[in-house]
Length: 297
Picture 1 (cartoon, rainbow, N blue to C red):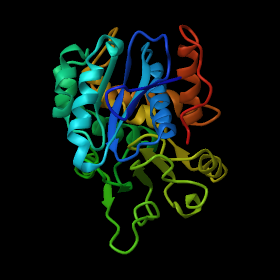
Picture 2 (picture 1 turned 90 degrees about the vertical axis):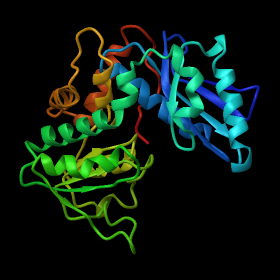
Picture 3 (picture 1 turned 45 degrees about the vertical axis):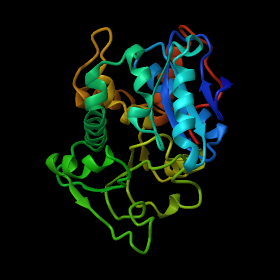
Picture 4 (picture 1 turned 135 degrees about the vertical axis):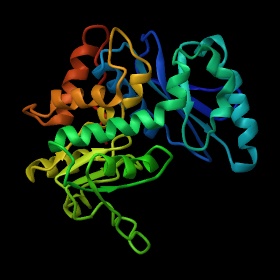
């Protein structure tokens, strides 16, 4: 894993696999984005693409700038990324960045227009399919959903259409009410390490479906294992958007793509998350050095 410091502005680009034919990830902006967090996001992307048999490195970039200097800093970032040194690095907008900020990078990005226009809906469809596959169907199931962006705002209605009852706890006095809701399925993922050792015991749901990268820490995963709570692999559940960018005959249906992937790992002896890691690592081992450290916070 290599961290490239930018020369035109205060920022960096993390590339997980140095010799990969391309790298894909997001860029975020804030007054101070931590490199360690960016490294975890890059690793998660590596495992996503490896699970689906794609030779892609994860990437994660940042622009560190105060609000009053952000526009100029992001413009400098985009200009530097458009250079030959980053010709195989393809980034989409994360928190603090708008798609328009990266417009000059789109012309060389291999992802089709449908990926950009449909990725939220496809990602959401994959999350619902993952939950349905793991739960043995959603009809009659209760679901609590942490909504925190445009993609997750699509989930409540999609779960209802699938037959689930969506429970909406009052978060006005307790921001963690969703995490602790008395439901069958918890959909969460607003930040890395959202569910850790300190609050895992308060989670009632028997199935946790990530809607963002690495919401469950290693200690929480171990605790859930002892309680027979199932945690799905975030780098699989959130991969519905890959249906808009098929390769080698892969499915163009997000629900089918993710549902089949979850079916593949549900019976793994180490559980679906660690099982998915092993599948990703097996593919990585055919063309690259398997990186040290799994994408588990």
